[in-house]
Length: 363
Image (cartoon, rainbow, N blue to C red; front, side, top):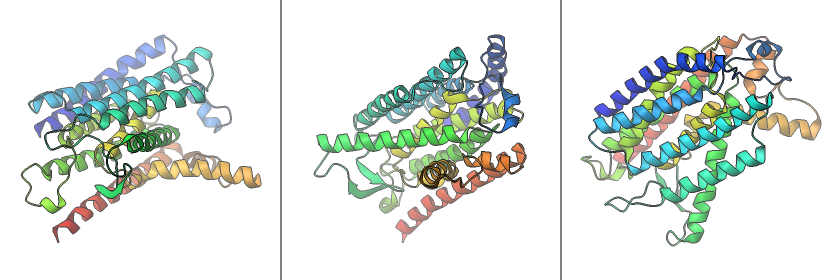
């Protein structure tokens, strides 16, 4: 368990120390952010701020995860390897998107169709591999059973893991990856907003993974009725701790006024990590509560577009939701801090519901 603490400390120190080096490099090469012209006018002053900052916390997290696994006495497990692959892969897609924006001198990057195709290919590979390499207890990292706080009785593979079940599982995982990566991407609109909210989300998942490790069905738990069949919870906890540490280090430089933005490089990677964790910890539906702020912000965009197409009227002054409050006159830092608090409350409620479900198994 000491590896979890070491991973957090390593991620924090590496990212805090390396981010100013990346800032200087990006400034020297004029790799700056382009701002949408229809957004709040005060954002135009942010034009040219270094972007692609997600690179530094992605790399810091991977190093921290590897160090944490080594401290725990072994090589990384299969579940966290898959998670890191999804995290890194989506980060690379975001990096390509950010690179095109900079090269083309515009706020739109990779073509939507190409981005979607790359996400589907990566999500499909992750899903397929998640159903391979079962441990000595016959458990694979992913499960074709739909899960809330643990697998339910609803199996996508009726009668066993056949071709149809695998295909349905791949479709389900791709939906989660697309939904969460785009949700975090929409949230990344104010200085430090997505970073701070993600810290609370991944703290919640670190706690869940640690608890699943202590209450593992093949561990020393005495509560066999409420035990968890997660394949490699400790490795997932190490990853989450490293990511939280890296995000804290990054937030030092990303908080208002931001000296660097995470860009699509960071937001897509964070969304992918969140989706991957929900699959690997069998918490796909409780994730909707844990990441509740991401859901609220995404729904504000969906509502705005849907209502405008139907009635040509706007529900919000501007979507996503944080821009609505900007146009109402709220200061950016006020919006960010209040949204952080809401994100923290969602995470606490999600973890509380997760724990409450376990308590019911004791009775």
